[in-house]
Image 1 (cartoon, rainbow, N blue to C red):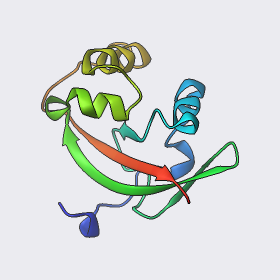
Image 2: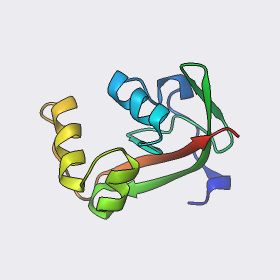
Image 3: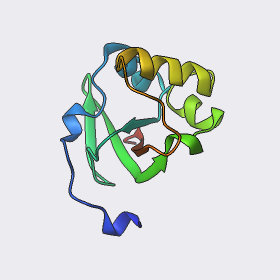
Image 4: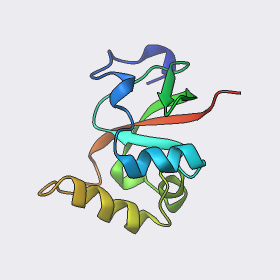
Length: 111
């Protein structure tokens, strides 16, 4: 699915990054992507965190089984295992299924 043919959003950009620890990681430049079970933003949309603006650069679907350590680093974690454990602690009882699809939202500071 190309970025020009995305399905409708399931939530709003204001809900894309909400956990205080994640907000701090975005503001410090540690976190440049977030994964959600739905689509929260369109490419080009602006997210504002603590009066700093970030533009959504890319939005695409990815399966959990495709995630790499590099993807986890973009999420602000040292390794895929660290990211996985964090997600499972936030969502108790959620299985980590390699075939489960998530929406990747990549962003960068507005210059």
